[in-house]
Image 1 (tube, rainbow, N blue to C red):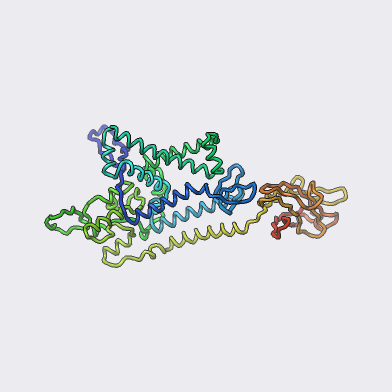
Image 2: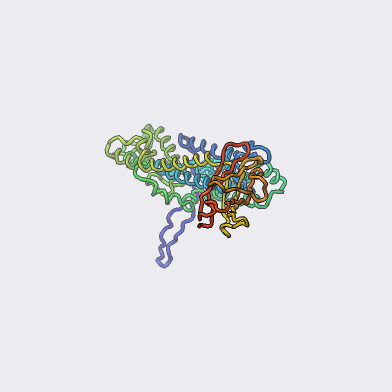
Length: 484
């Protein structure tokens, strides 16, 4: 972690605005929060790497990949859900829900997303795990870092970097599998016949994963990520976050076996530095909340382990709120956890999040398998035929979401006398290919002297019904007459 540069002794030398990064070597720790992080890491990595290989039968001539972003055909498949380009509002809605969910969790429990589920945290945890397997725990890694380059250091570094590189390649490779059929792309990659875009994407994601997870680590969270600077607007004095009970731990002092009893009252903190040594950000939580803290809870595990060893109560470092501090200092009972969570801000975020989700579900279940767009031809707005009839022209764009060919019937809901004709068709029907769009020109004709022919505008409704289906879709428009 970067520190402050010392002030120059020569006043003519400008002070340095940058301090070189001091590598952080977190020590291994056991505890409830570390176990939770292992489980979340395993689940999230499993979802990321395995999802492209899940199959889903959609019928003939359709992709059988459960989750697929089909750029070539401009569609997104998610198990039984199929999203077309004009339905991008579903994706926008999911992004809004993700943002509101982040606001909700931050307001309730601080940066729990950063500490447990953020991709940067997950892959950094994985890289540190590999580093620990190869180079040893904190003290061994510190020794190796300070050691001159010899055979041992070269061997361990090469093994570590190759392991990181393999993980990074798997990460970049897994990402491209979401955009095309995974087994087919894997065969192309193994035979070196894949499209250059696939190779470029894998190379880019491999490089970023290798650098971010292996070398940049906490620097990404501190300098590159905007969320630490935004989170303050999401938190208040009731937000639960990692804190140090200084009123119980101070004054801190070393605990030595056989030493005489201290002459002044001593707090529970024995200044063992366990909380600092396990922190992946390299900070000291005893100095209070800091921008770099990702609320991962590892310092809680380390401190609880120390408290168990010296026979002191757990919770010197714990998840707590600022209001808890005031209550505990005054000797009263702090609020229960549910009162910290259920407060106006979190309730508002929950209602908004649920509202967007409900709206998306309603839109998903109410959408039709046939989309229609009716565009009146404006130049000219109407044509007078030789027999005095008034004819309007409409361009109709239909999209068949069925995975089979359908015959579509056309009809209108309009005043008596108006009749419908399809260009190039003898009947008021048209055949549509599966998963395709159809452009059809349609004429509406009003006989001479009819009310619609003489009125300036008449509201009409087109109706479309697929053969063999009871559901219909409609589109409203107007018929333009002479206006007499």
